[in-house]
Length: 328
Image (cartoon, rainbow, N blue to C red; front, side, top):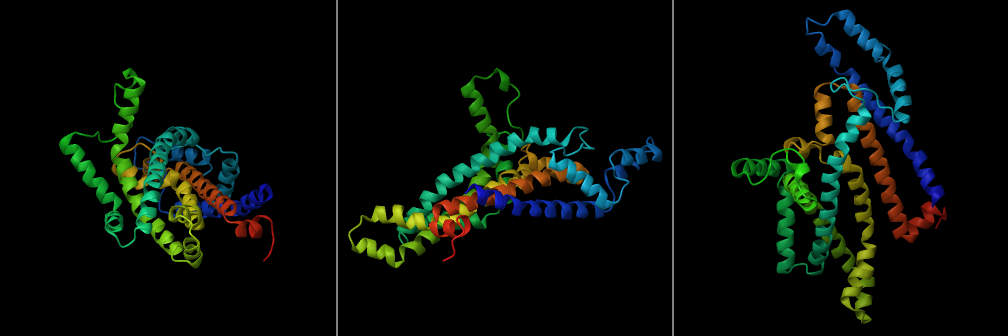
């Protein structure tokens, strides 16, 4: 398995380089840069701006600029933010915990709710329970996340039941541990609700359709005909065989833990990486944008690798072919 993991890591290395190279080209080919805005300020001389460009290596050829950035990025030296006047690594570190607090919570809640509901809907297909769960799923899919976020933000502003923006209250340090937990829950309620509703809807339909497909197969009918309890047939056989698409989806969810909530963070004023990246793009803060894309790209390949490992561990056919190198 270790040999397989190392092989996949080497295969993914060019993906990260290609993604960052294309992103770098797109950013550099866009009209203007961060220093173009400074040229509008009459108190800053052109010589000073040229010196700044030279200091950050932005007066060089685009290809040389990219390779200079890449060499530093491979050592996790992601450069210096023009807008925040701080190292990019420090900025990402500050916002990373807020983003992970939101995305990991929504990831866990979504799977804990969607998988049992999807199995129940698949087992009781066509019945009232299935129709109610399917109605909720279709409602969630047809209701855009950003629109739900706008509605909840409007209600919060009108009623004052939930705070708008921020992670904790001003008196957070004076609260007890339990009160701190409740305070964080209070602040995260709106963005978390939006993400969980959106995630559950799609995941629930996938689980239901996969379970229904497995329950229609001959091996399930044979197991029931032999007298195996229906609950064991569903959970031990049908559900296990239906796991592969879910494991692939887990990989994508892991990859999206950093960037998947960007739009919701911006709408709900949650101070995470998504909002930081948005501000960086608007300010044409080159190194901050590239640093965020670089970390997001690494998460993407690591998420896919985790999904591949889980699938190989769950399915012996894939394990024999991909990991042990046996050809059928």
